Image 1 (cartoon, one colour):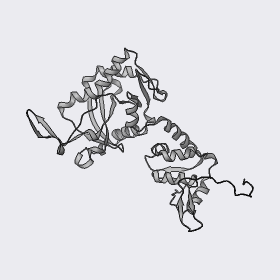
Image 2: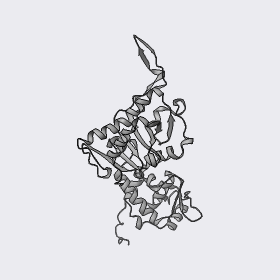
Image 3: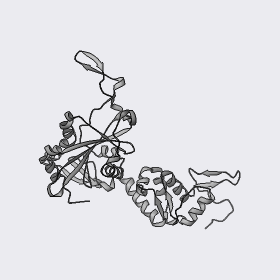
Image 4: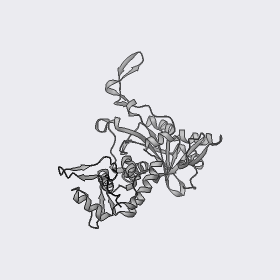
Length: 325
């Protein structure tokens, strides 16, 4: 944990320059793909108030009442506490920020006709301001959006004076007014634990297990991943695979050469590169790899067909035969 980061110092710094901060909004969907979205100049003050000033005000005012900042990994649902963790720990948030920072020119502008608002998961505001000798500074404020609660223009009316009139927008949204998540440099500041976990699908306990199993697997097997993928992120996304790995003693599983032979025997398309590393392009490849480790493929001696075994129960030794091993 970066002990140099002080959220109280950061909040006071931002409060001092709040009138000189520029803001840009992005929507992001359930795949954590960002979309640019413009806003009217009339909303500038509202954008700053709802996203930035609300969070900064909370930190400054509550610090005088005993507000503390603690590590998220030690969270216990305490009152008067905001949590923080490293951005690198929150894979989806890190990926989202990387796309905004490094692939900005390729980010599409949102249109409900093209991308469908119902698939949007959240909104994130990027704030920038001059940081003196350190150059431009940037921070983000993210909030979850309930797309199901949005009003669609085609099926909504508005009251104007004494009469109903056609709704004038494609979609209307009530912006969440609670503080949820801030991202400052490589730190994630968590105001609302449950909303943070839902927004970025972050489960600390699962991540610890995923990190442990990823380490064991990469120490024993040579694996090659598609660009942008990591074993840790794939395992976090696929809890059934992670649960299966939890039941295995990786050190005792078959070596790489036997696993590849087993895949050939089962006529499975397990890919390897020129160095003999097993190629993992997506979660389907990972599922096949883990199923091979668990010996979950079987050719019936009766009909010669191949099967994937969903669950196995070890049978006892037949009567009259000595135990094997």
